[in-house]
Length: 67
Image (tube, rainbow, N blue to C red; front, side, top):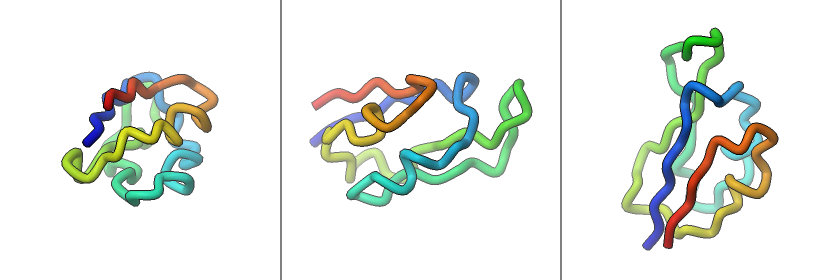
């Protein structure tokens, strides 16, 4: 089982991670961060596999992934 930590204030909401997540546990938040973007959030941490696909595709390095 994995765990993902997201820096919501750094996220620009590009959705690249949402598209590549094999567990489909990432989605854009309804709230805006301080920069005016809808950041990504994890909807079910228990389903994270720790694959780090989100980390590898993110242009802003907002993820920390642990296995």
